[in-house]
Image (cartoon, rainbow, N blue to C red; front, side, top):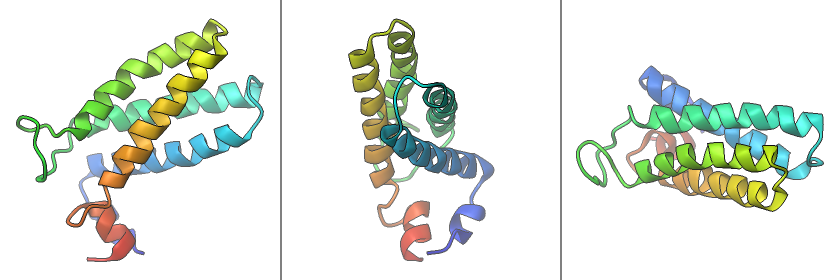
Length: 134
């Protein structure tokens, strides 16, 4: 494992990848800590900011694999999903609709980080080179 391919990538890809890694780590911490506490809310705002960074930055990243329409790929649909669902998840939390908040945030985590993240390990992509070498 070497971060060299990522560190040699354009800055927008670095921002996107490091924000995604931070959101993944923080999301896992959020799942394990007590809910509704000040630390949960504070880390939740950081997680939302990281996820927004991941989603927005994705629109400046154009892979060469599967295209939905120049220059977009189907994975950009997950970015749109995240950008729509993040405010909804926040609204659920502020409205004390715990079930809606939980479902929304877990869905964003699963779709926007886990599923999208798996696509980054396809051969020929930067994270594949980071994890498995060139």
